[in-house]
Image 1 (cartoon, helix red, strand yellow):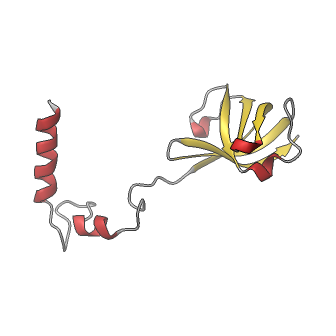
Image 2 (cartoon, rainbow, N blue to C red):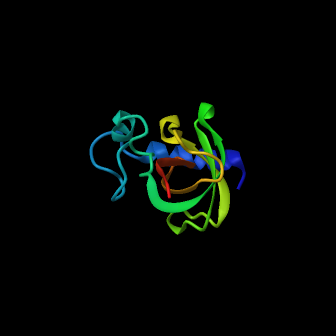
Length: 120
C-alpha cells in the first residue's frame, strides 16, 4: 500500500472515532482523552530493569557513559556483548577500566542506562 493511501485510511479512521464520551472500540481512548493526557503518558513504555555483571571496557565520565562487556541479559533482550550505557557520572567514582562490576540496567525509550553500579 502506498504511503498516501495508508495516511488517508488512518486519517479516516481517526475522524471516525468520537472526540468526547465513550470510545468507539473497547479499550480505545477517545481522541479528547489522548490529547489532554500528560505529554508522553499514553505512549511511554514502562522501563524494563535487569541485574547483570561484567567487566568495564571504557569510562567517559564527562559524557556520562560506560562500556561494559557482559553475558546475555535475557530480560533486556541483549546477547553477550560489549555495550555503551548511559550513566549518572556520580556512579562512576572509583570505577576504572578492567574492574569487574555488578550493575542494574534499564531499557527505556530504546536506550540502555545503568541505574546502579558497584565493584565486585
